[in-house]
Image (cartoon, rainbow, N blue to C red):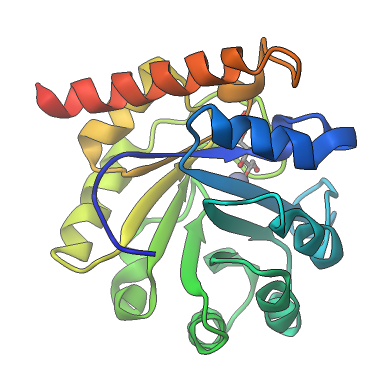
Length: 230
Ligand code: DX5
Ligand code: ZN
């Protein structure tokens, strides 16, 4: 996984057809998604339940790009090895999920995955100061985590502050929640380089009509790239 600041579109399968996740992943990758974003929720850290490491591991064989696993669970540490075995490339934990996030990030790297740190909308950029050398990705939440299809919360100022904190380190800024063509241009301009989108990609399409996924991906990517060119 080579670091690059080029805009990447990560398709969140939370908005895909859960009865056909393998096919949905193949379809969305064929239509141009750069990463596949998988949301793991525990009904405790967030008020929703999704899938666990067994299902994530079963999805691995359908993913040719990057498997980006976003944990919305507490606690995290006892599951890190399970997600490593499942084949996660990036494993992201929430700063708010427990008192020992530094230890968690170290354990993720020690298990040979890229370490992601997610920040809820109410968590300030400055909380990353003493963690910045222990992360490969910061996931800035632009919705309160738990559900797809929510309205974008404007976190562009936080992205700008994080870009300054990161400096020239090879750390991605990922943005997650409410991303469509208009919000994509705002966040890309502020400094985000991995754009997660669920409903923005999957709405209007189906496995039988996957070209809609491709059109949605293209629209989001073009909006982000053209805002950088201005
Ligand atoms: C929300 C999840 C997101 C979600 C985004 O808790 O972390 O990844 O799928 O969905 P959209 O793009 O529909 O806001
Ligand atoms: Zn997510």
